[in-house]
Amino acid sequence: MLTRKQHELLVFIDRHLKETGFSPSFEEMKAALQLKSKSGIHRLISALEERGFLYRRHHRARALEVVRLPESLVPPEPESTEAPAAPDFAPRVIRGNFGGRLVGGEAANEHAAMATDTISLPLYGRIAAGLPIEALRDSTTQVEVPLALLGPGEHFALEVAGESMRDAGIQDGDTVIIRREETAETGQIVVALIDDTEVTLKRLRQKGASIALEPANPAFETRIFPADRVKVQGRLVALFRRY
Image (tube, rainbow, N blue to C red):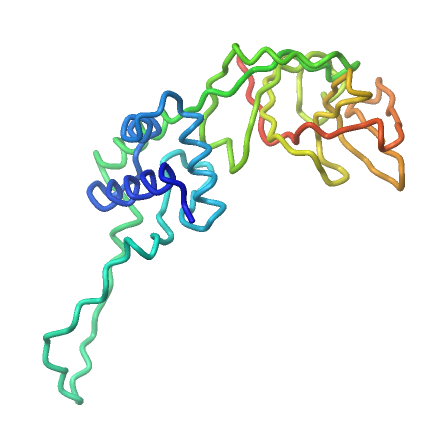
């Protein structure tokens, strides 16, 4: 069962694909549904993707495909009025794959449109990749992130302070994109909340009833805690760097 907004968005995307051959931008979807932010569109797309109505090719900003429509929107199969083919006639048909490739000006137009698809994520503040600091939850600050970096789920951004994750390619001043999650597998880089007061970005290792928060720089020590003192706040999914 879809919500009204999910249904409206699915219909709009399907119509746009049939009329133009490519998926609408976030701005077009936001205007069509009369929403105030792209974040609302992102949540609707994620919900449709999780329910199997949409498929999104990652690393391509405008690559939505309608997998299926609600039964109420699927037209009935028309009855055939053509006479059956003669039994000895076996036509040869060579099918051209014209739908998956754009050429010339069309490809350039799609590439330019794809580059404009971004979403605003809350930038909660600076997270210490060296020593834990108290989480800063100032959601008034936003950062524009390419949609291609994101998958389903809720995301937020944090600015890295420190060098303890240097050997994992995470530098001081980088912006990391975090998918909000409460669990993680051992070996994943997570935002961990310690004793409900400190937050840090580290690689999580779990063994029995203990959790190790492991840096990626030999100059820093691994910290080990009882599992009940550490809460996973999210998992690293992407980062970007300004020069």
